[in-house]
Amino acid sequence: MRRRVAAALTTLALLAALGATSVTAAEPTTEFIAGNPACDGTKIDPVESGSYALVGGGHIVITVGWDNGAVFDFDTEGSATVSSITVKGGPNALLWNFDPPVESYDGLHSPLNLKNPNGYWYGLSHLCINSEKKDGDGGGKK
Image 1 (cartoon, rainbow, N blue to C red):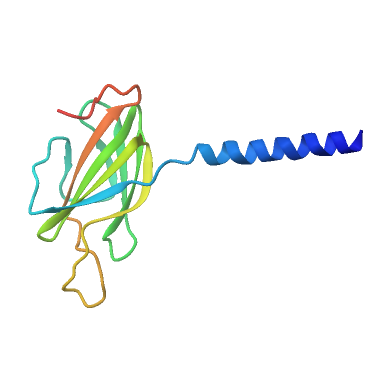
Image 2 (spheres, rainbow, N blue to C red; image 1 turned 90 degrees about the horizontal axis):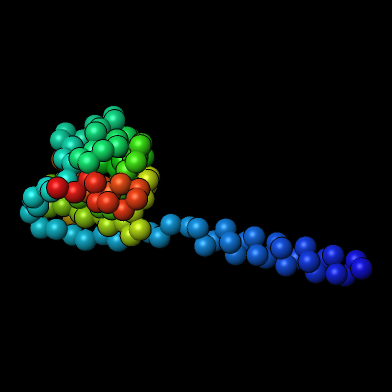
């Protein structure tokens, strides 16, 4: 009887552990964009900590802070998720794609400044956020 209970508890523990790993969001992909791309979503310029209305509904809270103010985090409020953010800094931009769309993410930044001997990213010039309604309606895209 004890062996059966122990085996059942072990099985439940393994299933719980496997179930917890399946809900982890995928990491975003990034794409370097030369120049200053057009924005077809919500544009935030200048990039400062605060709450901003998203095209199509909902809000996004941007927190700029660490690593000399060149890195930011975001959280959405309301019915929005973020499918991509273009981060403009220096002469170029960095596109962050989220598949599936997310409600929050930490540690986003602009392209790396290769001329900086300390390896810093360029400062944040502006953001272009493409968002969707949680039901997948593409509410934040024009």
